Image (cartoon, rainbow, N blue to C red):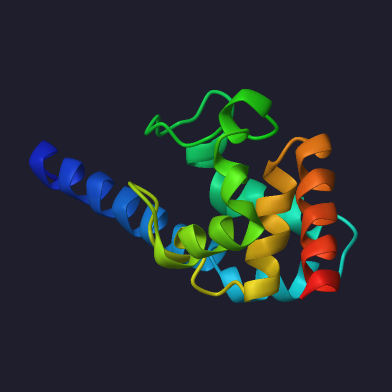
Length: 137
């Protein structure tokens, strides 16, 4: 007869193996990024996959990150322009890790993710400012 202690150990081990290997199988960031590359909503998908834990309106990890599409959260942050937002994302800022935790993202993908998080009117404003800056350069 198998002891209760042995059964409990087997249940715990089976649960651990199942969780460990199912999570390892499902997390392939480069494959995900390749599958969405060039899509119409590439930035939004990157935000959903990599950024939403901290940048959601009601985040799982409330660290004070600006919420997606929340104008009040982003107004002060965009005063430094898109270049500064990209620099903060690349280097990390406050609790945000470098590259926003998306080490596999290209620079273009990070920029698309930033623009996807901004309210539409602020994203348009920052893109217009960037075009004017490039023309005057």
